[in-house]
Length: 209
Image 1 (cartoon, one colour):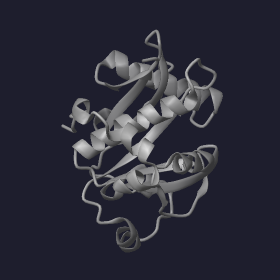
Image 2 (cartoon, one colour):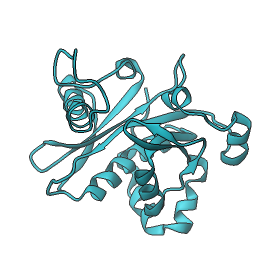
Image 3 (spheres, one colour):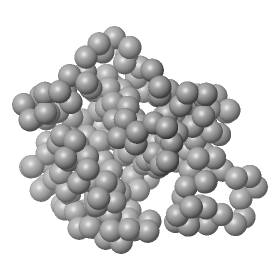
């Protein structure tokens, strides 16, 4: 396989993600400050104890994509801090009661590689969704550039807007949710995507500690 996705567990693996985040968010896009960092690596307080980092590796083991899941904790998820969301009552009425919600964050796919961008995107999504399903996560939240949000919906993911879009991190950004209790909607609307996500699930038995 030309690309594989792993959960970064060692300091070396995590640093590959942090360096990629620095390259894209701090240097190329200038969305986050580069000054004041001791090394060319971007990480924050959520990376200390509340995140699971996914890393897409190319032919030679180089990082071609990354993402993370932020776990619930004593402070709100970033989406709750940065966006004007619909009320909890409205969200749960439309998308089900949030029993355990996580947030997808720092989603990066390198451009201009020998690997197609959508292939890296799908593999990262697959790894995160399968872990969440195995761990009985009820909802996956995310805030995404509206073009990327539309792309994910076009691919067949049953994403729903849950608040007012705003200019954030360099572009018009949409707050959304993927309710995993309704993940079977993908089977009806995009059976090929559902098969891709959930075929041969024995290798997705990882769960949150």
